[in-house]
Image 1 (cartoon, rainbow, N blue to C red):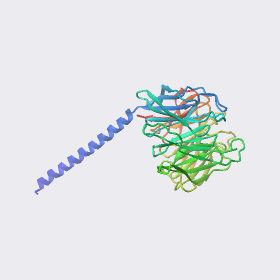
Image 2 (tube, helix red, strand yellow):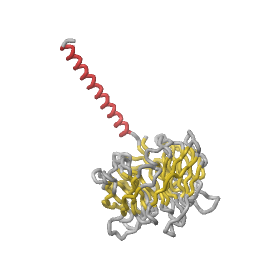
Image 3 (cartoon, rainbow, N blue to C red):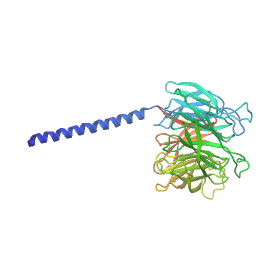
Image 4 (spheres, rainbow, N blue to C red):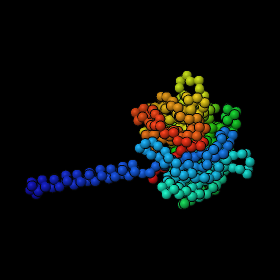
Length: 403
């Protein structure tokens, strides 16, 4: 082949590569545009009736439209369901919502339930699919297992977790397995017995999860065997006696677990390798400033998607005690550095959620009945109010959905 032919071939190759790169860039741009154009919603679980610990005033599950560009909220719909649809979760396919109906009066006639709904906020269509027993009083948290065929619910008063099957249409079936916790802790008031408070999938495992129990100061490690329809405890991790572990979150990149303790307002940092072995404690740190005389009852904990910051909500009586604590996360060992607390703009922040982009934090103030939106500083994780202060009666739980 002569040199002119080689030159033409080289030019043709460059043109082909250039076209291919342009196509890829256009493809990426198209995807980004589609993501930016996706409609975003926030579902809000609430208390609807007066209980011993809360004066519920809501009507059900609220559906809000979320505007990422402005950090604003607007009300679309209310899904009226069984009383106290407090904690909610959304199926990974975005088509179904599950609500823990936090009922408990000590009688056999009234027991907690879990409700299932099909959801389509774009078409504003919400259909009740099923209501089943939670197999315990005061169900306070639930999740869908990574196998997407089962849900797990934590029952606070009875101190157990139950496995509920999901059918192909998203409906819940009656429980197929129950694990009953036993024991008590040193706090006579809140730890006279077991109180399962949260369930969370274990990273990278299809059928493993952990349950945190406030009453016995334990993180209990479980594996679900679908073939045998059996729930097996495979390990336990002890938290500080009397700390009252309530919620937890895993680091998105590292091998750290962050446990929020309600009774002594601390975060415990654990390192893990496998679900079948106890986690190793690395650090204990307060959710209030050093030398603070305040007393808070932390509720929710979330690691920022970047893995650089951690947030934890405090509940109490003062601005310092009704706040979100901001921690920096060491990139090498995952340990925490306390930075500051930011007042949530309301009373008793039961929950908060980080927007999918990581640019905003939404704080749900249960007793003052409002959701306040904060902008996240990407450099240090600091929170600044955006001006959005949205009224919702007794909000408990926030979940984002993008369609």
